Image (cartoon, rainbow over all chains, first blue to last red; front, side, top):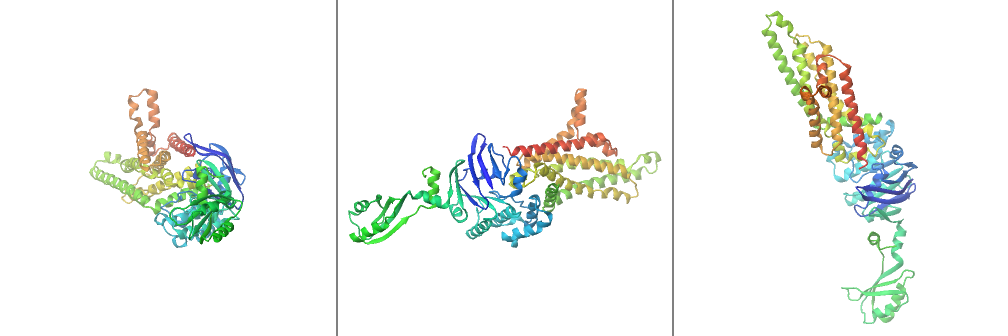
Length: 310
Length: 256
């Protein structure tokens, strides 16, 4: 549905996006992850035809954004970082206006606007002035204008920014309902968002793609070695040496603070918890806790951004 | 065409849901109404004073003494007010981020510019059409103004207003700051208004150019009720050039 190849965008000699290549299939939800200023917004603006790329090409539904921008724009719904709202308009007339310029046939406007209002939970504020709405409702109006013409491709730039937790959950639910029929690209710097909504993640840093993988794939990246947290009631001086002697254990570290807490790093191929437990019981250390430490997406993200991983 | 209409209609709606339209129209009507009233009173006093001397009385003409000055003052009010109408048209669109909406919708930059222009033109047309009541009011005084030159004058004021609008729109496309857009538009319009002041002391060829460039020069015949295609062509081409340049500016901004 979306094909981006070798897209570069220079702003005054500095590359905001540098040779980015990726593709998104129909019905897929792609998460765009990266620190602020990484080039997420610029990439999205290129895809929507708002800014032209310096070099490279981007295609949406087979149409090149440079050669047939109108065809591309017909097929996308776009929510920019700051929702583009006419503050001095009422919600419903605003949505009707957007429907018109998005090319919704005149007879369907009323129906599609009503549906978008319902889906985004805007019914209580449909007759109010946009400028007077709370941030959460404004964000929803922004989302409503992006989805109301039921586009093939939905591009959302940080859709949950500035919302309260319950609103965030609602918006995520809403985005999930688009999976399958619509292709969605959403950018965020909140990792939980990606975990909850996306099929595939694209980590972008400094204008370049740092990683592109499924969530499982990303999680597996951290697992070439495993780490285990171990806590004992009564240790002894020989504990570290004894555990290290188990085959597959790479290192043992005494934790600070806790009396007999250790972090055991082992070969990623095998789970050594059973053997460690057996050893602890046999030695009478009083096993209190034995827990695998999984890398959170957060850790993986930071590793990738720093260029450590993979 | 549907897009142009939608953008223009949104613009008109915004004018009338905000206080802007009412303030602009109200001030325009108050000023032009006062000027109209003052010249009408003066005209009736002149009529009374010279009622006994048929020769002078013959010279007194409601078109010359009331309507023609009215058009002149409307021109000046436009000069002051139209920058206030045009300043937000494109500048605000960029500042508030709604440009990102417009230019990611399947509309061309030409349609956006045209829609903006027609929306503002509608406001000016409404404003002007309310003052059509003035000549009608004169009929109630017993004087009989000649309606054809009056309509020609209205046509001229409208054309001049639209030219001002297109130039203001062009300036508005160049900046994100509304104040700069307003001041810039006012400066350019005033310069075009007085550009022929230097004509008298300039070499003949330059003098012709300066005279032909002056926005107000082309208005004089309309005021007198004369329709000359030269002036019509001047205004229409000024509008066309301004709108064309605006479209180019808007298009070029995407590349920055």
